Amino acid sequence: MAQKINAPRGFEDILPDVSWKWQVLERIAREVAELYHFREIRTPIVEYTDLFHRGVGETTDIVTKETFTFTDRGGESLTLRPEGTAGVVRAAIENNLIALEGSRAKVFYIGPNFRYERPQKGRLRQHHQFGVEAFGIAEPEQDVECIQLQMDFYSRCGVKDLELQVNSLGDAESKRRYRDALVAFLTPKRDQLSEDSQRRLETNPLRILDSKDPRDQQATAGAPPAYEHLSDRSKAHFERVQALLSRAGVPFRVNPNLVRGFDYYTETLWEVTAGGLGSQNALGGGGRYDNLVEQLGGRPTPGVGFGSGLERLLIALEAQQVQLPRTAKPLLYLASQSPAAREANLDLIRQLRQAGYACELDPSGRSMKAQFKQADREKATLCLITGDSELAEQKITIKNLTTGEQTTIDRARLLDELPRLLAGA
RNA sequence: GUGGCUGUAGCUCAGUUGGCAGAGCACCAGGUUGUGGUCCUGGGAGUCGCGGGUUCGAGCCCCGUCAGCCACCCCA
Image 1 (cartoon, rainbow, N blue to C red):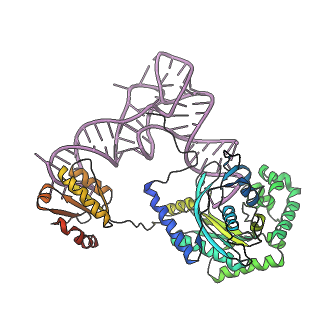
Image 2 (spheres, chains in turn blue, cyan):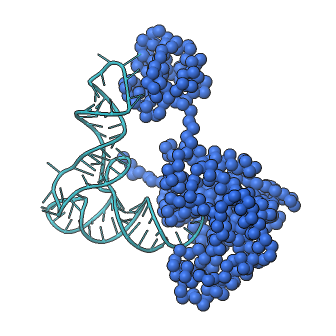
Image 3 (cartoon, rainbow, N blue to C red):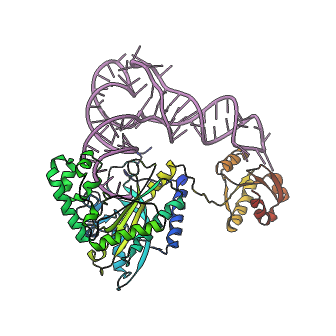
């Protein structure tokens, strides 16, 4: 045999035994999105590299060291999208979804993202997200609608042990003030910080807050909280978000150390964690990004949205032993005793499929026993048996594989009888 | 990018002091020349991740390398 080739590191096949779960999650996602009146958008998985530099941020780790970037044959630098928002914003601007003052657009997407990282539990180089983006409304009601949609999605999937954490960094001005205050607080303690955080003090000081290193946690204890630096407007916004969540009965916890990895976030931030996920326990997160559209060349338009990892959701569901609702058409298995019977079944299976029944037969001439074993393994509902005696009399025997009961009827009557036979199965 | 652990049949794994490559499950066939999910019998299946070294002899020891997993980092 020739040398075998594996999938690239961190890239996974979704095999038939689990792809049905993906279909269920995607169906639930689409249903929930429709209930909240978000419509689907599909954007390319490749964008010009500059989009992510300007959108996600020059200082973020995701952009500086985790992108799949390559030069195409025309010399253009392209990047596989590491997240969903930047591409959606680009598409919304380019296609004039938010061109007019007061424009509102609510979209959702389901698709893959790519980040060049070391794989571990809940972290792949290609992962899939369900996400939504709402443009045009700056009010806290829009933040909360997104959060509710996200929580609704999880509860319809059956995940338990959820925690919603929220925080606010305020508008650009508040965020800058807070950043400066934090740097001022931490600089004298620089030596007590981890090596990573000493670097972050220059590049991205806010991230020191959610470091897992005990040295950093000690050093940041007593640091000035973000809300002390919020403008009156930002403070009012965040308070209103909390009030709306409480009124909607959505449990949440304010985590003043919650920071997220993209530069574009302003005002509200949130993250949802679930049990059973291991170290990478964030199921999804989001926030408001009121300056992003303008930064990417659009008319100034507020926006808010979230992204939610589907692999992580599946891990959590698995760990929590949640059964997803499996919906599949009942399978009819056509067993043939002889080559002549198989010929007749080739005609029959065509008619059955045309009539909308899911059917299978084995053309390889194996024994009836082997065919029944197959039918059982494929979880067929009925086995339609054509032996030489049935063939001679133009009949067919139907065996219910659950009860074991079987009856013989005229072949011509099969299509009429099937609904009744399946209803009893 | 850093660290720890693990690589043996399709899957889960055993393999003693270095001495013939194994089990269970799965698969195929037969028992039952027309009937599955139980049972019995038999069968196919392996470059022991890869490369080198030590040795009469390596799955086992040594060096290197690749891959997977988990954690750091980062985040979904």
